[in-house]
Amino acid sequence: MRVLIFGSGVIGRIYAARFLAAGLEVVVLSRGAAADQLRQTGIVLRKGQRTAETVFPRIVENTVEAGPIDIALVTVRGDQVDAALLHIASIQARVVASLVNLPRGLDTLAEVVGPDRFVAAFPGVAGRLDNDGIVTYIEVPQQPTMVGLSSSGATDTSSPQGEVLALLKSAGFPTATTLRMPAWLQTHAIFIAAFVSAIAATGDVMVLAADRSAVRNLVQAVREGFAALEARGTTTTPPVLRVLFLRMPVWFATNYWRRQLRGELGRLGLAPHAISSRHTELPALQHVVRALLAGANTPKLESIFAGTR
Image (cartoon, rainbow, N blue to C red; front, side):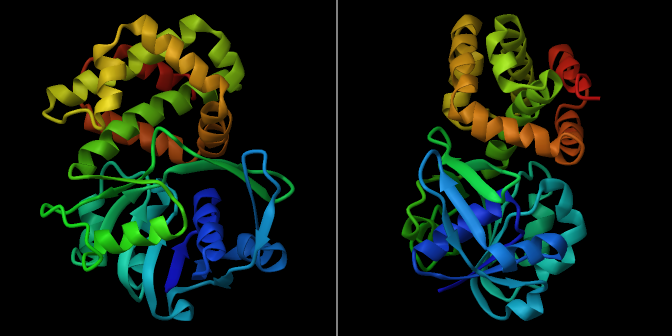
């Protein structure tokens, strides 16, 4: 099977390296300095505290050079999608899956790609790219790689969704599925925009975790956002986030998230994203969340967003 990874950021490198290790033929579309670096030193990947491993995928700079592909995974940042639409549309693949934080614009991307070959998904990994070129990452236990299903719910390998699931499982990625991918992405957008904004404003995830009052305020901000989303007819998805933020007492959620922020999820899953996206993807995501909740009264959420200006 030939797999194209469209984008060479942290997420793209993780999936590319894992697919290569599973024996698949992998092509990475990258440009400029990143492409040069990947050709010279490859992808150096380390899971948690394990020994780093190096792989050398084929690097291309356009979809023509990539040639025919079985499955393509789009791993660019959400704020880069619009500029890349024509290039994504030109991918010569049977299936094109989006691993992008895209709470708005899924319909546009599906239309450009072709709905019969498009799959909306979301990564279940996170990490950081260190100065030495090593990608240190984790699989997020609370969030396997999510694959959105069509209305039929088909997951057999004759469906695009089934093909993507089979690909992910072949490389050992935990997976989950949902029939409500737009709601899942909108929920995630509120959650991640709030948490990443709070970390960016504080400057250090450990400092944030140590501040009970700040984490309590963060929990209340996310609760505001989820309540506003539900008032617009969108159910918080997945149910575990609905329970944590809308059903459990604030003190319980505060203690839970202080522990998570001190652990690998905070250090490798959230903090690197806060650093790398503060002046790029994060402002765009905040804008999207404001649009999703337009007219809602969310003062705590807005205050957290304002802290990153």
